[in-house]
Amino acid sequence: MKAPIVDGGSSRRGLWRGIRGYYRALLSGTEPLHLVIISDMLIGGTLINVVTMALSFGLFGIEAPAWLATAVFFSPIPYNLLVVFVVWKTSAMSGGVWTWPARGLSLAWFGAMFFI
Image (cartoon, rainbow, N blue to C red; front, side, top):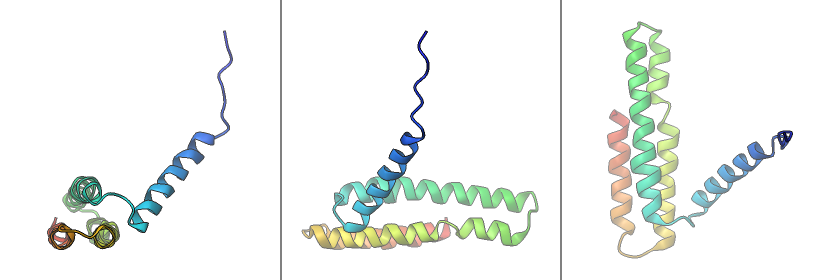
């Protein structure tokens, strides 16, 4: 029987390196525009907003402090602003026909997510 291999936490470091690299690529505008819009904004961002809305409603339902439920409700706003910024920057870097429709979609999505 072989002894298990212990990596000393290198997989965690690799995970953080991967996440940092992904956000670095997002902020540099090198990710494809369609992937930023579909995966980061429409799927990921909407899912984050729906989950935090459900949590805040649950907190209101169990009569938790109002400040806590409100803070949970508004907690995805920094991520939403980041996604809108990334869409604007990526669309500017990629140019083309989809620049202004992508920007308009990101602003409409941000407005909708503010209420969700």
